[in-house]
Length: 117
Image (cartoon, rainbow, N blue to C red; front, side, top):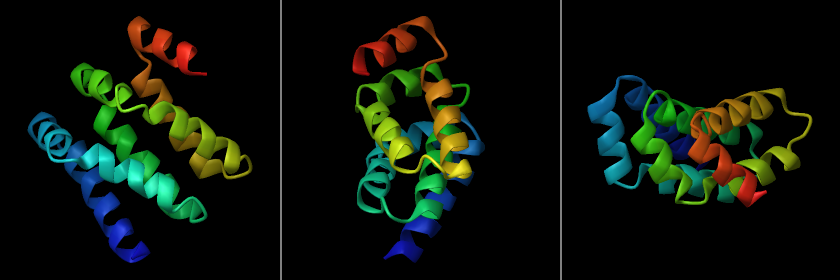
């Protein structure tokens, strides 16, 4: 199962990097829920969690509408709790910080982050 999730997370990440149409398609077809599911259910697989964070980061990069939709899924608490769980894992900390930065780049989303913590 982990191999399938690794493959899927890699594919989501690559598709999201290619731009707007792919990002919208991922958003509309449950991509964020799939990423959150990986974070929730593979919490002991650091490499897979880091990849899921990286996929989320690619999805939110330079796309304000995705940021708003994703923050509504309450993904930020998952990011923070997972980062706390893997305090010594550099890849998770880096990708988690990038994802949080991407999600909170505008003042509205920064306020949402402050309210959730």
